[in-house]
Each structure stands twice: as C-alpha cells, then as structure tokens.
Image 1 (cartoon, rainbow, N blue to C red):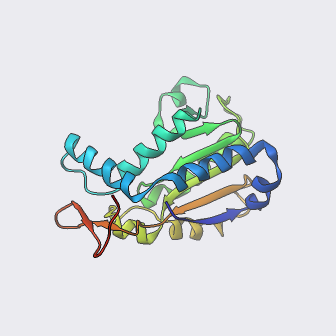
Image 2: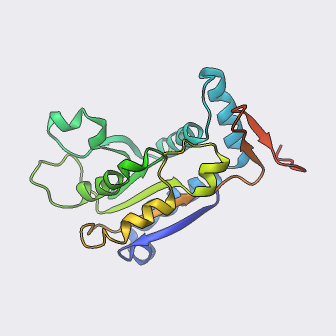
Image 3: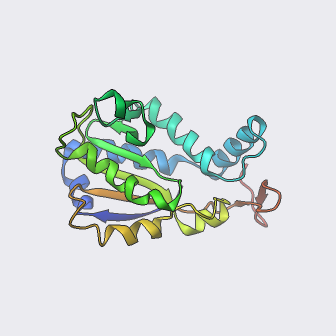
Amino acid sequence: MKHTLYYHRHSDQIVKSDLKYKEDYDELISVINSISDKDLINAFNFRKQERPNIKSLSEPINQILKEKLLNLGWSSESAIFYDKAYKTNRKWRLDFVKNELALEVAFNHSTVISHNIMKPVLSSELNHVKKEIQTSLGVIICATSNLKKIGNFDGAVGTFENFIEYFKPYQSIVPTPIILIGLNAPDSFYINEKTKEISLKEQTEIF
C-alpha cells in the first residue's frame, strides 16, 4: 500500500541511523509496501463470507498486517504493564511489538487519538506502574482521509491528518520518537457506500 509519513521528534533520522530500530522498521515498511489491491479485495471478500455486514477496509487491512507481522516474529496484543488489572484490559495493550519498536494500528474513533499516541509513550518511558515490556520508539498506522473515504470507513474514524493536529501541541508531552504512517487509498477500487461491496474503477485490471 502507498503511504504518507509524519515524523515526531526526529524519528526519521533515528530509524535511518540507529541499527537498533532500522531492521525492524524497514521490515514493517516492506510489509506495508507488499500489500496489493488484489490482497485487499481478496481479504475483504473473504471476511464478507464470514461476516456479511462488514462495510470497510478496516478489518481486511488489520488482518493482513497481523498475519504478515506474526510470520516475521512480531508479538501481538502485548501488555504494557505487568499488573493483572492492566494486563487483562485491551486499552493497555499494544497491537504489535518487536524488540524496542511499539506499533499501533489505529482505525478507531477520533476521540481515542490521544490515547493511541500515548500508548507507545507509556511503553517507552519510565512509569511508576511496573512494566511488562520496554520499547523506545513508536509507530502508529492510520488511514489518510482519502483511504477513509474510498475504503468506506466509519465517519468518526480518526485520520492521519487528525493525528498530525495532535502531535503539534503535544510536542512537549510526548518525549518518545514516533513515526505516523498514513495509508493511502487503493488505486483500482473502492468500497461502494450503498452496497458495501467492492467496486472496480473504470478500465482497471488487477488480476
């Protein structure tokens, strides 16, 4: 998938120069780049058979990312804190972790943008609550406004553009370097808002 990047606290220079992050980050970008329109269509149609009321690309993208990352040794649903009261609550878990890189896939409501930003911070910085994991760099994957529209995401979903609005005033309270990845819309198709089905764009051949 094509994507757009935003860097918080010089995270672009960090992943280029620090070997502690470079391999894992490059691996993640390769995974994102490997997702084709055909992959998205197949995943959407497969999910449609299991859950007919699916209406957007949110679930297919999540599923593809999960399968590919788990195959590469990423941990899924990693608890940030050791305490059982936090460990069993999903809001205190990271979507994926590998070594010192924390990854959130944020296709949820715009009201939780701030919490999505803070989770990689909580897993990276010192905390008086005992930690389960320790990371030092965060990555957040979200939808750009064009993917939100073309992929028929819920209207309340926070976008890449919304996240950037938060990062600027949050500069002083988010000490962790974070890379924001905004996924762009597919070139060859869209999800029809009325039928909730795949609609190919004119003169498109993807198979």
